Amino acid sequence: MKTEFDVRLRTVDMYRYNLYHTYTTASGYLAILIAVIALAAAVRKWGEVSVSNSVMYVMVGIILLVYTPLTLYLRSKQQVQESPVFKIFCIIRLMIRELPLLRER
Image 1 (cartoon, rainbow, N blue to C red):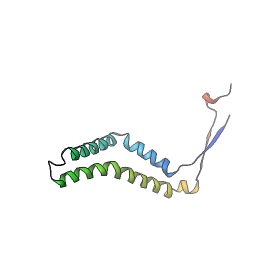
Image 2: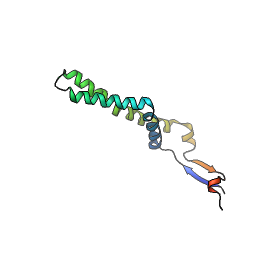
Image 3: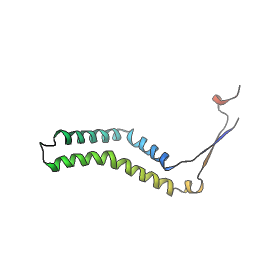
Image 4: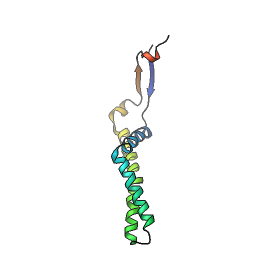
């Protein structure tokens, strides 16, 4: 038994892949933790410290929570558009030969 199916890799698929691999590592967890701590510090210390310190806390939180996924999306879009593999072969044909689990009985 031979099974064939087509796979088309889009920008969104590459973005999800990059996002998963960025945020499932120790550095990804650390970035989220630092962003949450910075935003919590900005809210907690808003009137107690200077405005520039509070704005800095908010900016650190925004950079870590918004800027990183945005750059990952732009990088994913660039990878899909500029890759010679995806220019020549828009659809990748995968063939699976006989697998023990798929064997007809």
